Image (cartoon, rainbow, N blue to C red; front, side, top):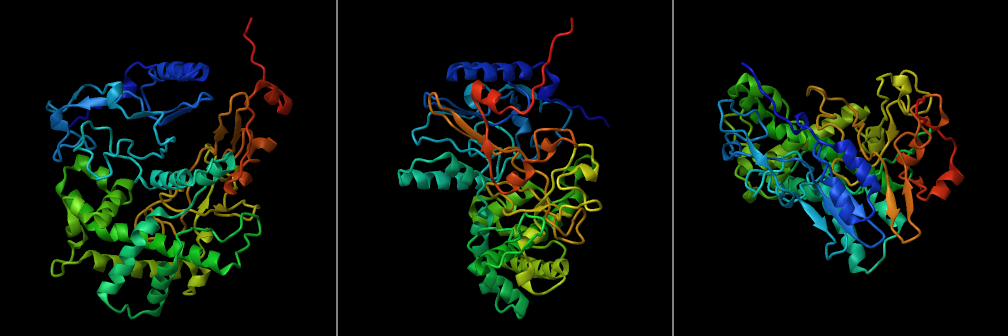
Amino acid sequence: EGVSVRWTGFEPSEEVRAFFEINAARDLDSFKTALSLFEVGAQNFVYADTARNIYYSGHAYIPKRAPAALTPETPPYLILPGQGGHEWVGRLSPEEIPHLENPVRGYIATANNSADGGNFDDDPLNDPVYLGTYFDLGCREGRITELLEAARRQERKLTIEDVAAIQGDTFSCTGFRLVPFILEAVERTGPLGDPELEAAVARLADWNFETPAAVSVDPSRRESNDPEVRAASVATTIFNLWQNAFLHRTIDDEIAALNAALPDRQVGFISSSASAPGYRGIYKILVDPAGTNVGDRIFDNLATEEIVETRYDIIVLALRDAVARGTEIFGTADQNEWLWGKLHTITFEDLSGIPQYNVPPGEETDESGFPTGYPRPGDKFAVDASEFSFSAGLGEVPDSRDDFTYGSGPSMRFVVEMIPGHVRAVNILPGGESADLLDPHYDDQADRWVRNETAPMHFYTEDVLRYQRARILFEPIE
């Protein structure tokens, strides 16, 4: 059998020209004109100027699909039948692509979420147009909106420092939404009969949903002595161990059944539940079961025909898994030692794949005190993104590892204040400005990045010249 592939990137487009013209835009209209040239690799474009305009667009070449390619039986996010009738039938017009200009509320928030809200019901096929399915859960955008709305209600003018703090927010949105379901499940299923489980439940019940690492980012890796910080850190560990176990406990049996029934060409697509779509599905079923076409049936384990498990059963089983794995990973049943920063770390990996070039360096050569990466606060779907694997901490699950290390997050922490004649900006990079390992600027920004700090980013030519460290001059060949 053969497979044919169509991608917008296989057609001529002018992204390089688009970026040149975006950089040369003088006002909102010229920015829109430049953006119209951008077609492949859809992005969230946001714009602001000193005339108080703000604008958002996800402009790109987005195909319009035949009705036959928008059904539950033949959805556009799986391989489609090749006998015809499922092809593209045009492209979405600019009016059909989400965009927003100078909203009355005075701000725009976007964080990889479904811009038109179409995926919030976890059904991308019931909307006026199909934009895609692999979007963020929406918690990050929701938390940003919550913080901005709080400032708006207080009529408080935000500073650069305030906005940078929002970028670095590590409140656990999923913990806030899902811990009540854990507490309800424990109450419904009766006594746990295990002091360690009961201690874990008590910690979750007292959690403020902050997610501190509780391990310092200086080479000593000093642990916090603050009881509240340690308590929140341990609760974060327990919740995230539970969250991953719950995902796999819920849908691994369905995944296995689907793989057994699907043609070979589809199996690889859903060979693991360790994915954002899988998590988004069970999250939706928990918080709004009536809004799905599956409901609580998903929680019944297909491998136990004589028993019909409920959501409460699976939640408690996953909690038992979490406590057992915590004890195994940390080597102690003393939950006070289960600090999140011991598991949740980041390493800036060099593109060469050589561990010695990573920041911090790889485990075998590390002299920085961070053999597995810098300790970090935050968890899945926090504003300050930290996308560790959904298989982390699960032991026997394929590709699982005991730590929750991650290698993707904010590629810069950029904030700009648009004051006429006095544009001010700050930024920091995850690593450094130079790609030369021997250059002091190879990794000199990493320490600030992990502390959620920024540095001035000079905007005006005279400031750039005043603070320059070096200049590279490109001259045409004669």
